[in-house]
Image (tube, rainbow, N blue to C red; front, top):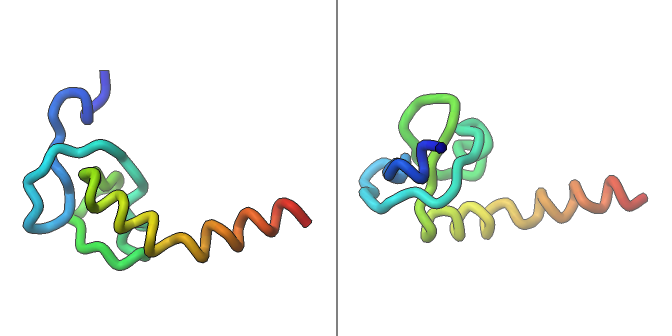
Length: 68
């Protein structure tokens, strides 16, 4: 049983929504979201959507590396 199923809140500063995803904190910081310290960043649905939008280009480039 993980932290999300136990009711972990979103790690973004100022957000109090329940988390739906857990990601490495350095990746979330690199995407430009302000999260509290720690190894993992817990994101709610809206902030996870924003994270995906901000990292779309990097993910596409990474996928192309493996296809070539």
